[in-house]
Amino acid sequence: MKSTYQIAVIAGLLAGLIFLEAGCQNPESDADLIRRARLVANENIALKKQLDEKDKQIAQLEEKIKQLQEEMQEISEQTSQTTYRMLQITAEAEQRAVALRKENEQLKQQLEQLRSP
Image (cartoon, rainbow, N blue to C red; front, side):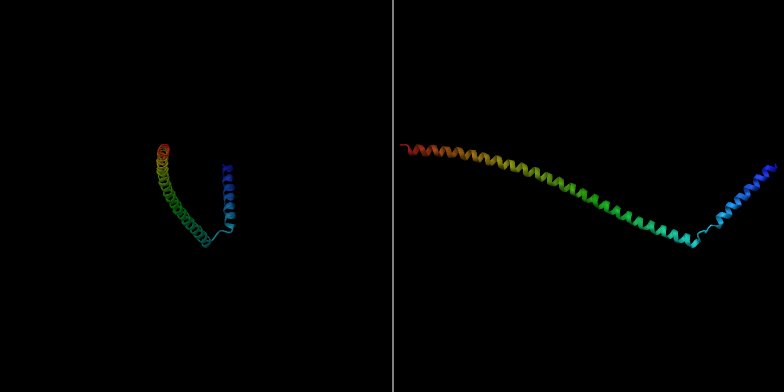
């Protein structure tokens, strides 16, 4: 029993020394704590504003990407249509060229026949 009492007294003295040591340190005053809390709050507000601004930028960039993808799709469709039309025009021009060559040959033959008595 005596040893339990001694352990309790030693533990109490040790706890008292710890509290005394903690109390001897330069504790922050309430004003310092308030100032620090305000600084942290202001920093949090500034970071929140930055985050909101970045979110707005991301939304704008996503909208721009969507718009550019739509434009790219339209341009792709226009390019396909233009290519198809150019192929049609080329085919028509080739047909006309063939027809003109045939007509030229016929006219040459007629001219030769007319020149030959």
